[in-house]
Image 1 (tube, one colour):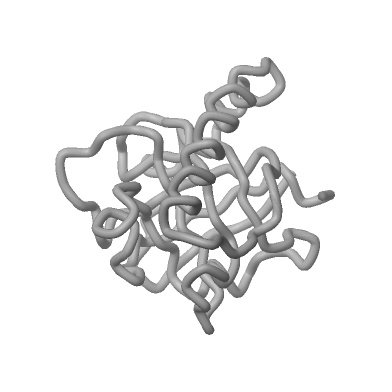
Image 2: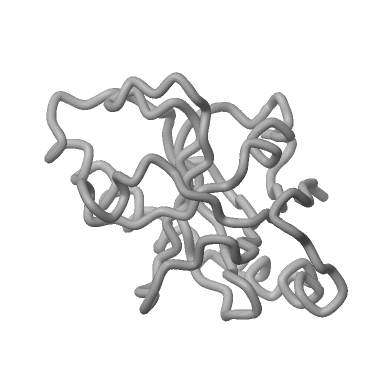
Length: 163
């Protein structure tokens, strides 16, 4: 995918409410404006990369882009699981991410348990791949350093792009 790495940020919005409740894997959802601005060559599927909430630290992440076939969604979404335990929800805060690589296409599952196993496998794969030097260096990218010192975004403003 020519558009990787892909950088984007936007205010965290409420999603379908399944990540924490049904899956035990909380996700942060981007607004439609971020989803609609994805480059054409970023297909649906599971990605890995780095994420930062507000002025916080940069953590590993996995992201699902698509319609979540298991749930038969009719609306395309970008759901980010930041691989870190947060003490509370962060709706309305700015989520900054860099998508570094692609794990797999989205697909449906025979059961909720099979979906959870696949997500946990994706998380483990992301953790390993992000240790590679070429991926690790993006954790220190200026995108994360300048994201809150120079840019102020409201819930309706977003920023997206790639290098």
